[in-house]
Amino acid sequence: MKLNLNNENLKRFLTSSILGFCFFAAYFHSLLLFVFILFALLLIILFFEWSRLIDFSIYNYKFWLISFFYPILPILILIYLAFCYRSQDFIFPLYPFIVSWIADTGGYILGKFIGKHKICPSISPGKSWEGLFGGYVFVLLFNIFVLPGIKSFPFVLYLKSIWVLLLFSFLVTIVSFLGDIFISKLKRIKGLKDTGVLLPGHGGLLDRFDSVFFVSLLLFFIIVINKVF
Image 1 (tube, rainbow, N blue to C red):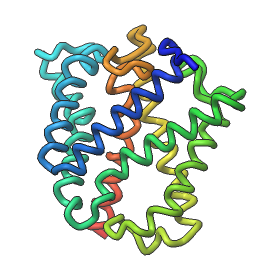
Image 2 (cartoon, rainbow, N blue to C red; image 1 turned 90 degrees about the vertical axis):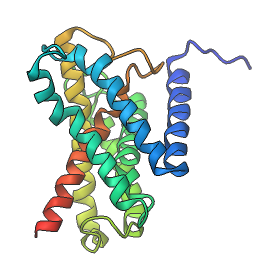
Image 3 (spheres, rainbow, N blue to C red; image 1 turned 135 degrees about the vertical axis):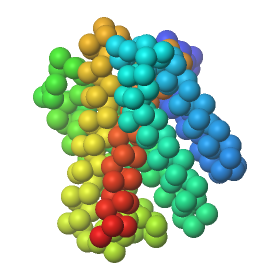
């Protein structure tokens, strides 16, 4: 059977597979390589994608003031997680990536097949309540089977409770969704379909990492609260 490389679903699958393999291979290879890729990711996003979405030039101090909170801070958090936790808990620093992409996959699958009730059609026409629920189910299943084994996870003792897992999975799913909507809104304001053209079937890097960045902010907030209290 001949593959149709113009098919968007096939492009999306191939791009995700290649990106995921390269990204996780770098993490498993060495911490320095992983950090290098994160810095490269930040530079590409800052100068080729983020600069297209906001109204300030990269030569304006307001650009860097806004950019510190997004996307610079999320990248720094991901680097912090890798440096502080990789040696003691190998999977924990990858949690924002894995859970965000799981939510996106679950939302895409259910939204594609049974999604009828749109959440915000003027911002992201493809997002449906059914898809959001699918993302939640996928995240919940992942958390139920994986989180109890991550010893470094904040509130790990409490996460053994099914009720806390239900609530936490809901929170992660919503934050992941908001990360996607945030970039979609900026694209609509600028009249852009994608943040870039680097990833066939996905658009730009921000289109792929928007939810990851929001989840990393949530996770860091939980870590800080856990240390303080």
